[in-house]
Length: 148
Image (cartoon, rainbow, N blue to C red):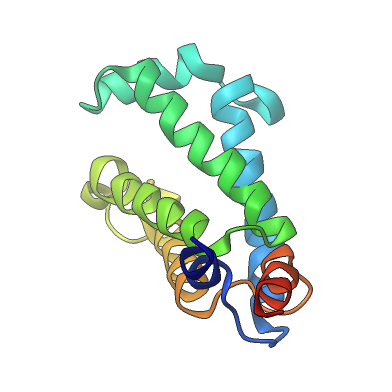
């Protein structure tokens, strides 16, 4: 079991992931809060679920809860640096679904509803999946403790 935990929390001691995970984690958590709770001008589960249904993601409320939960809790995980690799994997998958279900047909540019923003978030999550949380993270502390 400790070998699995070591692999999940292993990270380098660079500060570079910190510069990615904190602002992007805040963005993800805010977007998730829009979907789940209707905060920050969002539509909540019912409204987001209706949108999800309209683009073919069914059942809409379940899909809204999954996307919102991934973004909200995954974003919080990035901010504190807890289980960053698994959180990044889930967030990367969420961005792939967003790109291919909602944005790809509208082209690259966000002004037209395109996928450029989701693509940038995908790139950050893949980077964090590879690098881990870096220094100043719960993962770094847990990894050090696991090593003894």
